[in-house]
Image 1: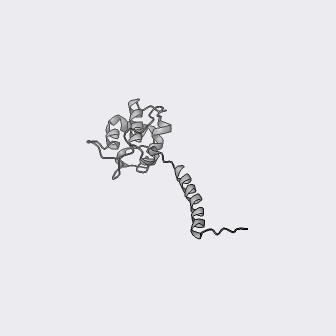
Image 2: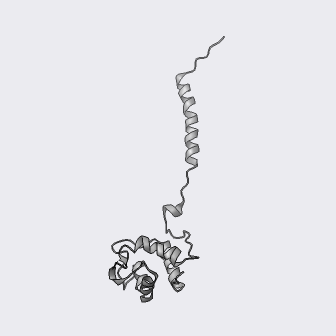
Length: 134
């Protein structure tokens, strides 16, 4: 019976090939959603339909504004944690200018960047709808 001797280099090569295919397969399944990686990019989708005070605007205020603008310590006498308080600020016209960093109002959040573009669009849609308490 003839015995074949396999070159050690070929044996290592035979082990590397399946590993290489496995790595290629795993990497081919990688997926990034651009909207999550780069929110607010021009052209990215932002759903402004169905924007409500309770479901959209109040949570945005809670995460971005209420720490400084709560009834207990309303910075600038602006309360964003209640509908009535925010509605008063909206009616004055300064609220939109402040969060959009426009002239005529102190940019908010103070010392921070503007809110993401999609969040601003949602707030603007709510304001344009008459800032309803819904």
